[in-house]
Image 1: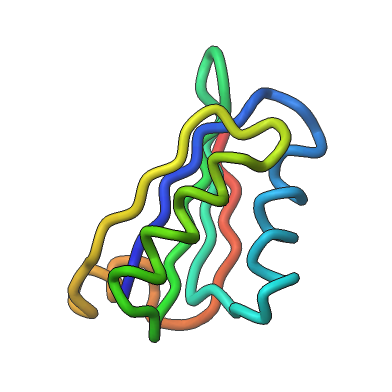
Image 2: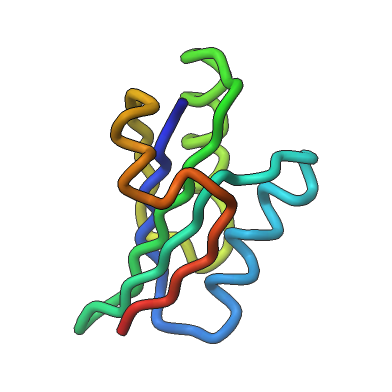
Length: 94
């Protein structure tokens, strides 16, 4: 299981662009959260079933998406995912 952290510009199109990146590749995230920060937004996306190399490629390609400032990925244990509620969720926090 992998968690992607994406920092994006404060633009109404940033969140849909990140979500669309996964949709175009037929990945259904287990969870997606977005936090508004003073200078940007941070989007976290949890996806299961990826190989480490595949996750690294996805993180690099996310960094090329318009409005994305930075992208990183980390492998997480399913126990950590339980903190997200263990079912598909979209959470917006401001």
